[in-house]
Length: 414
Image 1: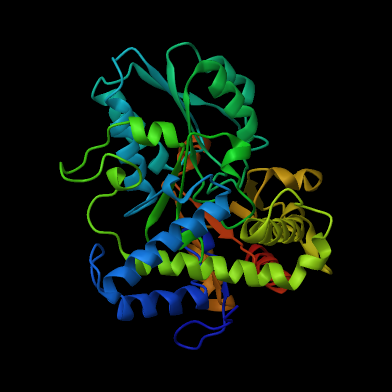
Image 2: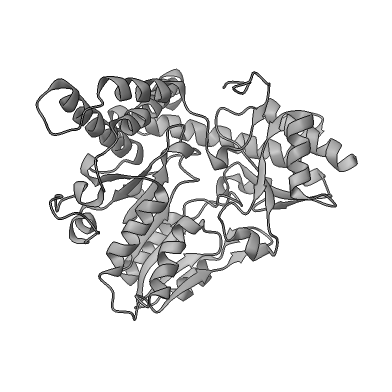
């Protein structure tokens, strides 16, 4: 990764939960598409046909990343938030006012506000919140199961909490959704850079993620099963197609955004090529780019677990967060259960305001983190206005983990 910011200052970038750094391949692909294929689609000249080809390749690349059945199940939008609002409105048009929607206490508001608005407009009876075990930072699945009944229309869950780092058992929740004949809507924004996602294996009805959380440019993408994508009625202009994905997409698509996500996929396939010999006996049920992306994202997940282990237990002679009694960590902290979390750590330092911790980490140690509520319910659940968050991805290093831990030790001692 680039060890320096735009002004040349050496730093450790641990603010990935707010937006990851852009892959070089993504930036170059976006720029080339912006310059060479800036014409609108739908005509016979080269700039127009080239823009259309880039958009189609972008859908195919995302479909391969998610193991979606066809590129036509991939919808683009301004953001994950806008796509979830659009989905909420479309589902709302099917409802009678008697239904309920089940979600969780650790959701980002992008996956809360669309459903809460349906309740406020009396389109549904209520939104129900699955509790979080605050000691462990784990979702209470049995409570979720109890909340679901014959009137549940949607179960909306994060694939991973953007504050606690907790991963959600999506396959188990999908089974609950199937039994209730409810839609399963997955917010994968925070999960997408940390490991593999397979929408067919999960059996979710819809899944969203953001490009800028995945080493690309801004913009969001939604996967949906073919049947609900084509039968639901989103708001659209009359001349637009009644088939997916066009019926869900407002206005002309930005070919450069699709080019950027293709650049990320190129980066991941390159990564797969470097390590594929380690996975010769794995993922044999997949071919081509789908298999390459399985290899890459599996390797990333394994590496992220090592970053999590080091953050909790320490690096060489530098103590981990678990060894700092004046640092409270929110979320799963058991080093033997690292498969239940992504490398995102929210914490508070006893006796110091969150903003002061952030400032000291940056000005004295060159470590970029932030403190806020992260548009999540989590701080409210724990009764605090904000937390400090350090979030890692695969370009971060154990040395950067060590730097964070050493800096926090100094701050605590000071």
